[in-house]
Length: 113
Length: 122
Image (tube, rainbow over all chains, first blue to last red):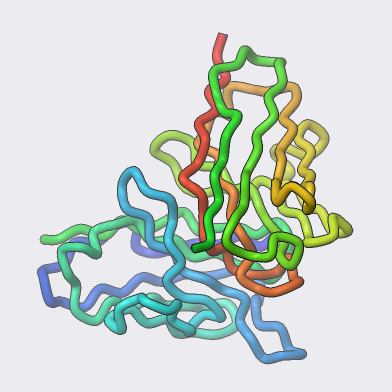
């Protein structure tokens, strides 16, 4: 099974500051035949289901603000919020969909300082 | 609008069974794989099971293998999860989610339903 880890466990940043979340997979999720990274990012606010932010590691879902961006390849990935807003307070999860079981990272809680 | 609505959760004693359902609308159900994901109270997300569009490919987390069975009825636009031999550690909010990739179980999950709560307790 592919194990997903995230760092930090939580972070607090001021409004307008950059927030960076790291995700690491125990094996590569880059599929060589199509050169795509099978990695997604989700945002979950209290009392709500997760919401897709990013897929293929760096493709922003329609309607997601452009302050959210994803990067990385192979085993190391990053979600960046370029200018933190109050409505971004949430838990963020990465997930690999390269192979079953489709594992999630443990989550990173983002708060406003 | 793509929508997934789960039902069937409730309070059940350890060792008993429960069947969850997920009603899909707003998309061609039999074009996509669908999945169950659970979240224990205050915890993270755990993929439980997934099924391809034609039921040919099915996967389970080790934690539920041999106890849970996923199935789908494309004529009814519905997904199911039969849960047997339930344990206290199966207590969670169970979400269904659609694969984001046409015809491929290996896709991101979007959208998600609101979830149905399963509580296993005597």
